[in-house]
Amino acid sequence: MATLLNIISLLTCFFLSCSTAEEATSSSKVNITELWGAYSPYFDAGTYLAPPTGCRIDQVNLLQRHGARFPTSGAATGIISGISKLQNVQNYTDSGLDFLKTFAYSLGVADLVPFGAHQSSQAGALAFTRYSDLVSARSLPFVRASSSPRVVDTATNWTAGFSAASHHVYNPSLSVILSENGNDTLDNSMCPNAGDSDAQTDAWLAVFAPNITARLNRWAPGANVTDTETYSLISMCPFHTVASFVPGAALTLSPFCELFTTDEFAAFEYSMDLDKYYGTGYGAPLGRVQGVGYVNELLARLTQTPVNDSTQTNTTLTANRVTFPLDRTLYADFSHDNEMAAIYAAMGLFPQVAALDPTHPAPRGRTWVASRIVPFGARMIVERLKCEETQTRFVRVLVNDAVQPLDFCAEATRKGKGVCELGAFVTSQTYARSGGEGDWEKCFA
Image (cartoon, rainbow, N blue to C red; front, side, top):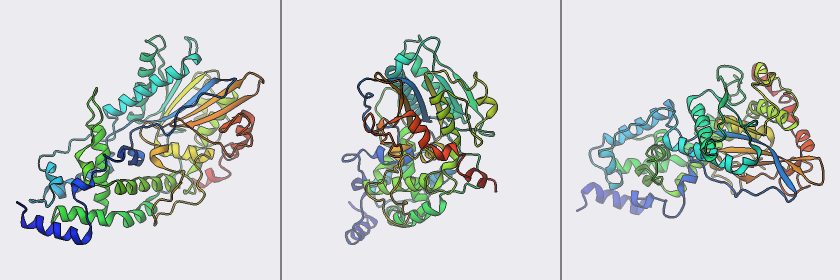
C-alpha cells in the first residue's frame, strides 16, 4: 500500500509531469553508454574503410586516450556528497532509490579500472590485426605515454594486447614516458594562462539541472541535493558501470543509470561538449595551441624530417633518434582527453559553424560531440598512404574509425573524400607550423 508520502508524490507528479525512477531508465530504447560524453566507454564512431584502390598504408600514427578510470578526487567529492545526502533520508517516495539503503561507495581514485584495461588490450590486438603488414622484428611499434599512471597502464595493456594478437612473436614495449612535470606533448599542463570552461559549464548546469534536482529531492524528501551534486550523481552512472565490470561478462548498467532519462543524459553529454570545447578546444583562446607540439611531432614522422617546434616538445628527446625515431612504420602515443581535444582543434578537425551556446540545448548537427571524439579509449589514427601510379604519398585521418573529411586540405578529394596529398596536408597545418601564431607566448604573458 502506498504511504502518504507516495500519494503526495504521485499527485505532485500528476501536475508537474515528473518521472518515476522506472520511467527514467532509457537503456531499452537508446544505448545510453554513448551519451556519457568523455565518460563513455570507447565505441566506433564510424566503420573502418580500407584505403582507396591502388593505395597501401606505409605508416601509422596512433594517438589514444587512456581507458576507463575511477573518478578523480575532485569528482569523487561531489559524488560522495550527493550519495550521502540521499542515504541520510529515512523514507524514499520512489522505490528506484531503494538500492541506496545497502549501497556502499567503494570506488578508487583516477586509476584505470579493469574494463579500461580490457578495452586497451582490445585496441592493441586490433592494431596488430589491422596493421600487421607494417610490423617486423626490426620494426616494432614505437610507444610513448604521458606519465599519469592510468595513461602508462593503458599503454602497457595496449602493448600486451598487440603482443597476444601476434601470438607473442612481436612484443613492443613502452619506450618513452613523458613527465607531466616537464615538456610533454601528450598532456595539457604547460599553458599557465589557459583558463578553463567553468563559466560555460556552470551556465548550462543552471539550465538543465534544476528540474532533475527537484525530482531527486521529491524522491528523497529532506535530502537537499544541489544542482552540482545532481551532475555528480549522473556521472556515477558511467563511473559505477565501468567499475563494476566483471571480466568475461557483458557490461551491466549501474542502478544509478535508472534514475535519469535519455534526454537528461543527452543534456549531461552537452555539458561535456562544452567542457572540451571551451576548455582546450576551439572555444578557448589558448586551447588549441596546447596541441601544437604533438602536431609538429606528427608532421616530423610523416615527412621523416626533424621536429620543428618551440612549444611543448622535449627537444632533448626529439633530437635523439633513440627516443624519437623517424624510421618506424607504426607509432603509438597515449594521452588524455583534454590534450586530444587541443590536438583536434590545432589540426582543424571537428570545426563548428557556430560556437556552442552554453545557455541553449545542443544544436543539431554539431560536429563537436565529446562521446564521439574523446570517449575513454578514444583514438586518432593518421595513416600515410603510398599509391601505385605515383611516388606521391597521401594522408588519411580517422577518429574512432570514422574517416575525417579534411576539408581544410586543398587536395582532400584527389583520391576520394578524406584523402589528402601529404604535401598539401603539411601546408594545411599552418597554425602548428607557426608555433600557434603567437598564442604560445600568451600562455606566459
